[in-house]
Length: 373
Length: 160
Image (tube, rainbow over all chains, first blue to last red; front, side, top):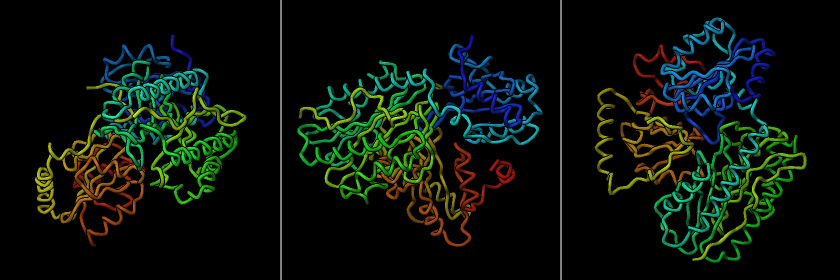
């Protein structure tokens, strides 16, 4: 018996409203922590190869994954009525469409544009008429996390915080960045993180965070950690800054700016507020301190962003985004910032939107931490 | 090997000059420049993304950890590498390639500027079509590039 997936029912209802007969969603096995994986949203399965979900207006649903030997993994995870594991996606998709009476029907496609040209042309060859492209649909339907997803996100944040504790234990002069990154990566994997967009690097004056390299940690280094584990399809992120040795007074002073910006942003992030309003609330802190000219790349990227692979909504926290927040949305807020006196600093939490503003999912929010030199 | 694809490619992809000296890339660039000379091409675009990046890595050592990158190789002169990353991240991207001129792929003025150096009527070709065909489609349509011989019918059939 497949687990319940309300997104399938929502998709079927949407088809009815739009006068469409069926929806086809695609994924090629690629996962981005910034994007929605449409097949995962509709089936609960992160495929390893080309895959599709077929949803009919009557609510019937079929997941098709490749290769065929992935059946054992995919079937128990799938929330669709039927799960097929095959080696030729296009051929099987044609058979499924024919059986469901959808071969000549009015169809919509989601994420086909992200597939290989070979696959896209094969799918288009099955269809009697050009389908409606609804690449936004899976992300839109999943824009508010359900209770199961929110619980998984909380678990992922718990893993991230344990990973950071591990970093604090293991970081010391003489350790290479990649050794430290491997340590905390495997530690979080052991705690259940199925994936991890882990950036971790150090410098005496950082320009940005990057993937771990060969640098040997030394006294006075500022370690930046963008710790981003995924648990049951829920990516989360915490951003942390750790000094090896005693932080300087100016570093303490400037880090408080980031914490203030974080608080201001969380207060502003109420349902109905736009992403631009939240961004401006955060940027105001930096402007008031004389860093208004630094509120742009290359001194920062965005003030936060949505998190895959369920839904990337509400998108990037930028001063031009008019996307409005909704209660239950989950994303990361991070007023990470280059400051000329200190270099790049990081401070960020995964938050859920409540009627009072954003609530951090972390037990302990970011502070300027230090480890022994 | 097929497995659940990670959200970011892990590992050390820094350009290690001791293992792959600049001379090696000079030889490789010589091959593509000979091909350009034989065909009368003014430049070549070598595309790669997190999934398929063999050609891009061969010529530049650059492997996109996420999203895409594209080497813009003129028949004469130094290449430019566009990486689909914020300008904030470009210093880190430079450590992965011998190409000194690395720019963000999010500001297409860097592409326009490079195309302008080819002069009027320059012929540009695509080498290694792979990955997101939206990017290829965008490149061809927005910048009016000539697709390879025989590819016109296929490319015109792509949805916009």
